[in-house]
Structures are given as C-alpha cells and as structure tokens.
Length: 257
Image (cartoon, rainbow, N blue to C red):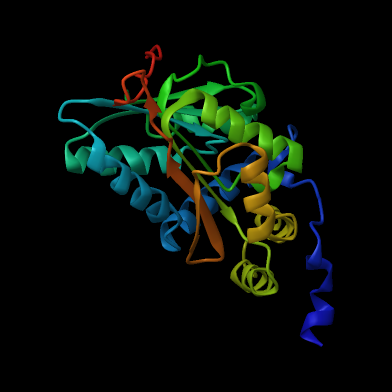
C-alpha cells in the first residue's frame, strides 16, 4: 500500500518551484527564505557543510586567506555560518555568494552586511570567474532544481573555479524523505509547502548522484549521507605532480573584494 502511494518517486518528477519564479510574491519569498534558514540550522544542514570545511581546514596554513564561492546562495545563511565558524577558529575566510534570482540576491546582500561576504548576481552555469579563483566551491539544496546535463555543468564549473575542493549538498529522493517533508511542512506557508514536496520529487538517488559525479569527472568527490535525508558530495581535488614527482597545488587567483 505504502509503496503504491509513493510509486511516483521511482523516477524524477520535474516541477518548477515557486521560489525560483522571477515574479514570486516578495512577502512569501522573504518568509520562505527565513523558513529555509531555520531548517538549515535546526536540522543540521549547515553543520554538515561546516563539518567538511573543518576537515579541509587541517591543511590550511596560519594567516592564509581562504576564498570560497557559494553557488545559488539564497539568502546567504550558509556563507554567514561559515564566516562565524571561521572567526571562532581564527581563520581568514572570504566568501562570494552567487545567485541569479534578482530579489533573492537583493535579500542576501541586504541581510546582515559583512565585509567578508560579497553577493554576485550571475548564472552558475557560466560563472564569471577565472579558473582557480577560489579555494573551494560549495552549493546547498540547488542541484535538484536542475536537469541532469545542468547538474554536470554546475559540478564542472565548481571544479573549474575551485583550486582545492568542493562541497555539494542536497536532498535524497526516497519515500521516507517525501513522507517526512510532508509532515514537516504541514504548517508552513504555501510556497514552502509546495516547493518542499517538489524538491524531494525531483531530487536524486544515490546511484543517480554518483553517475552525474562521474560524468562531470569528479570521481575524487566522496558521497556521504547525512541526517534529514540529505547527501553531501565533497572532497579535496587531487594534487598535481610536477616533473620531479613533487606534490604541488595551484595557488588560487585573487578575486576582487
């Protein structure tokens, strides 16, 4: 019976999310972004990204400036969480948040301004940054908005602009995840309620994520499951080997502040 009810989840069911629409109701949009911020904190979604950065930070040098780009940054709650985490640990971190939606980019820029955070309105499929402009590229809850070829393109763009590693996090498509999200958003506003269901229905399975990762040429990125029906694809880029066999890493180019 349960399997029959959720049989539509056997394949991705693509559906436009209200929050992505250029003419989205600004009041609902702001409320929805606030709801997403609370969910990211309450369910540990932000902590999942920080855990991977904590692991990466073991290789950081004292007084080194770490540059991170966050694709489809939304209201930039995760970049701000990263900056708070970095300040507590004494790391010099700068983040550029990228989002194409004009209202969302405006909200991100105006919400708690921080000189270490810049918001850029741009298409993440064609990032306006040079190769290796950042140490790390991250994205959260974005890949399910895309078709398969676009996911491959985004992962390749992350690989291109990041000199040291990536973190890509999103939902997993399962029956349990769909039932859980329905219950969790029963009292949410209409935009959140609609988009939450659409998000799970068009999310990816583990097998699909790994196939897309391999198509993008990022076999070095490891797949991990996290609490809240979420996965993270993360890893350090393989180091280059020079002519004498010495392990070296490319230095990231400077991004204008």
